[in-house]
Image 1 (cartoon, rainbow, N blue to C red):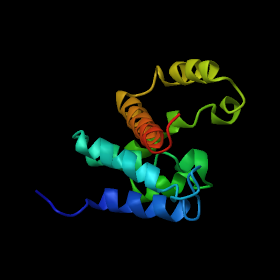
Image 2 (cartoon, helix red, strand yellow; image 1 turned 180 degrees about the horizontal axis):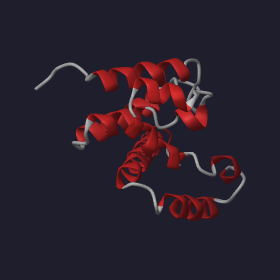
Image 3 (cartoon, one colour; image 1 turned 90 degrees about the horizontal axis):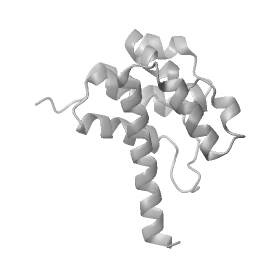
Length: 141
């Protein structure tokens, strides 16, 4: 078992850390970059390959930063960028819609997407739900 990250995962970590630098999670306590790192770890522990893990680590770059697609491509791979692009479709108009409308749009947008992109989205939701469960334990309803 290799105890070190592959170059593509190392590059994804550095890229995500650089572009998310200074961004804070909504709790105001932790840096936002902890979220994409956790998504990558969820994917890794589930046995996904290094490119999918790297895509998980980079999954918020196109929607939460000004990171150019070319930079993601240069430090990761064409496959990583290909898996990320469906995750940003429609993000700008979704924020003003109800949860039900957002869910409908997300499912419609992702239907033709690769299964790996869907796995990244599921890992993202798992991490968000874990955070909500922890907040409920700490703060109650």
